[in-house]
Image (tube, rainbow, N blue to C red; front, top):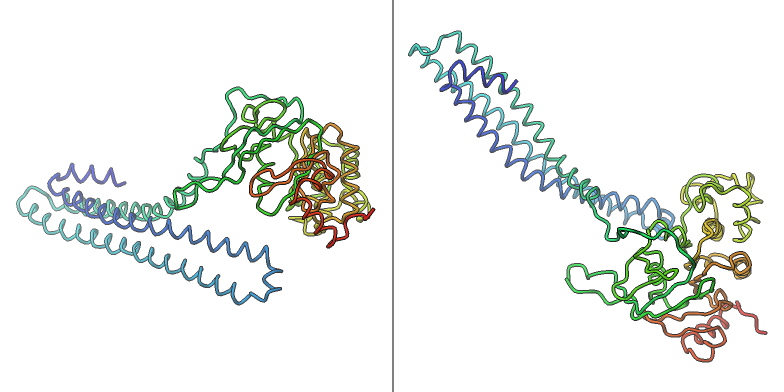
Length: 444
């Protein structure tokens, strides 16, 4: 409508049609200014939405803690402040967008007045008939209605551009780690070699300086089928070490080999399929117990699931549930205890029959007797699998083939339980403290 009306006005009187050209220039300038400033505010608005949503999500997921510490008023005040900031920004943006309507009305009525004034002169001068002037009034209303519709589109675009930019950040994000051009898909065995590995999580935010290495000069060689215990204080790099095996992160210096090949040579999906990880903070999904177990092996039969649960000491409590293995697990596993959740996650990992099994403090919520049963089941049921057991309790790792003691991102000692008691001060101190305080150890 805009284009056709403009053409007809030019055909009737090209000089008089310059009025519309001037109107479009003025309106475009106003729209550019409005959109420029409004888009910047909407960029900030959506970031504030993130803060608001994060606060709500955090409070809903931790509602018991909020109530236990009587922090409802404090959290409500935080929410009101976040919502108030969002409101203020929206009002500011709407004030800018509100300039669109008066600018449009100014242009519309300015065009009508200019057309009436100059058109009358053209009619008196004989270069324009009254009928043609009347036609131009019809066309000018069509042009201006089209411009109003377009201005509203551009106003909406100022919000859409801010949203689209955020979506594009996700869609165009390139992963830091990618498969090689000709990846290896077969992993021959579970041997692991750390060759003088240094690892850092990246640069300090806003400082432009490299952070201190989380791991420093790790030189460790593990045979296939060996059981390795890993122990050390909080923040010493235990979890960072095992995350390098499945290439969740890449080393800063040195190299990590699995099955005699650099992990960077493997197809990442193939590598991670052969490295099963059970974390301390485990996640179960809404669905039956069997459906959760089959995350480890999609085509696993019920008999295979039962066998894995027997190894993980989960079968005994599953049998006591009203519907057994068909019991429905609520989102996040809220209808099972922490220890039960850990045992289900161990069983899920065992179903993969991996070359390497990593237990990252994954028996912290089970009693020592059950922990011992699980370790014995691993030894009998997974003889060829390399097992890395991260634990806080020495009783969880003392039967391992070798125990790795970590301190401040470095290997402080390695050996059997008896060897480390004689030669490693950190290990001996942990052992004595736990022996006196927890009663986990047999005095004999």
